[in-house]
Image 1 (cartoon, rainbow, N blue to C red):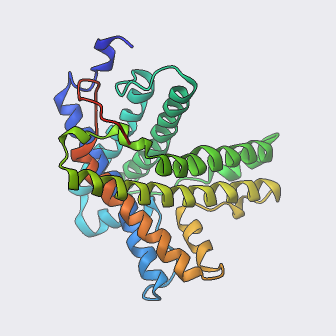
Image 2: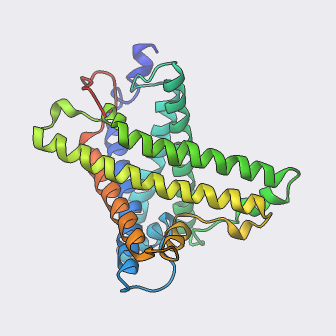
Length: 276
């Protein structure tokens, strides 16, 4: 990739600042569901575990419209950052099989956070944050259940197992400015990242499994998002322990993402340590 393209973020300092704010917003929309799921695990809360979308609505209700505008800016920029990482390759993932896989993951991330961005815009317009269920619409289409099932399997592998492998191998370190960290900061960052990313991968795998189940039974109601995945855990043997463990993982991921506002690499001119 030509240097001018790879430096797309560095040439726009304001965009880099917004991107780093996006990491903070991403952290908050995992930290809040994790904290509420932890309360549920200890029996101090009732009802459905909150999702990222309802976490955004909670921020709006508790902190007001200016915060919602700031959240929209962070989500929109973070989604665009996913596109930039995939197309311009500022992190130099390259064109190997691994590099292409990682860059496709950036596209998936961009689409996911674009959805949260649109939900935030709906809240700003005074509407519900939730749009019509796209799974139900796809199910009604020709070959719809097959498409949902394939998507679910892809979610299990690409978003679930891949995240767990990334955590175990520590490859996320490549995206961090480890050369700017003290030894204690680096140790803390890597452990926080491993725990958070691995347990987020577990949740993603559960969500993917629910999509496969929805396709198999031709029943979109079997589909579960983050909140449903967390609630499914509590009905398993040792459910409260499992839910508390995953909730702590989401909290760890949220904190890791917030700290990535300081740690994350945004271009090739930052020295690359042996990573992630």
